[in-house]
Image 1: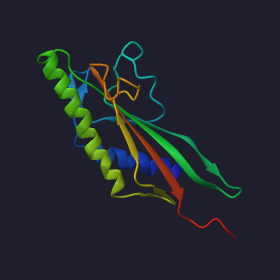
Image 2 (image 1 turned 45 degrees about the horizontal axis):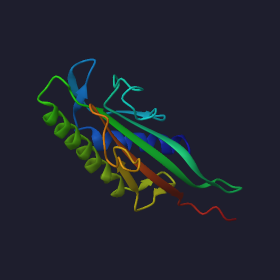
Image 3 (image 1 turned 90 degrees about the vertical axis):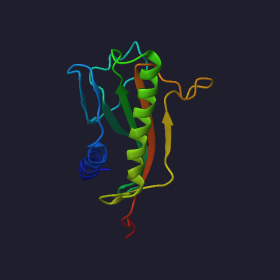
Length: 162
């Protein structure tokens, strides 16, 4: 994992999501998700106001290191959108939020199509979770916010042996 990976990975996320449009509360307009290399705070309605949604935050969070270079690492990709609470009924808003987060998942599946990022390769399959993963609340969303998480693993594709 290095700056080349970070640049290529952020660019690929931007490329995949460029055509999507989601509600942006400060402007009242629709926009593509913003991409940040950082972690998204805890998923609760009280903690987040959603002012910066739609967004995609990603970060390195684990891996293995050899004496020569990192050989594997994990990346968490957190995605968040917010629906416009002033449009439609509550049910229509919930349907819209569910459709929106699912459309985001569908385009991010494109990561599996081009798996190489510099000298690192995305391992398949990768795991995703829509909404809560808390037992008994699987898939639930804290309306008007909708979340998606991808858990990705990467492996070095260069030979580190001498």
